[in-house]
Amino acid sequence: MRVATDYIRHAARAAHKYAGDPIGGASHPQAPDPEFYRTLAKALEEIAAGMEALGKEE
Image (cartoon, rainbow, N blue to C red; front, side, top):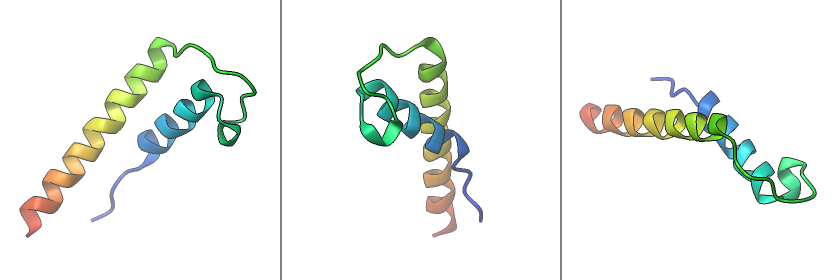
């Protein structure tokens, strides 16, 4: 089973950016915008769905 990671990776990049982490490329912290929270929610939903699917396979 292939697990989708696009939203998860996008949320991670955005979190780095908003935290001012050099990995995200920002030099100073920024306030998260609504799109960040939508992407984060989608990423968490995908993580939960993937974990549930893996649990069902066992």
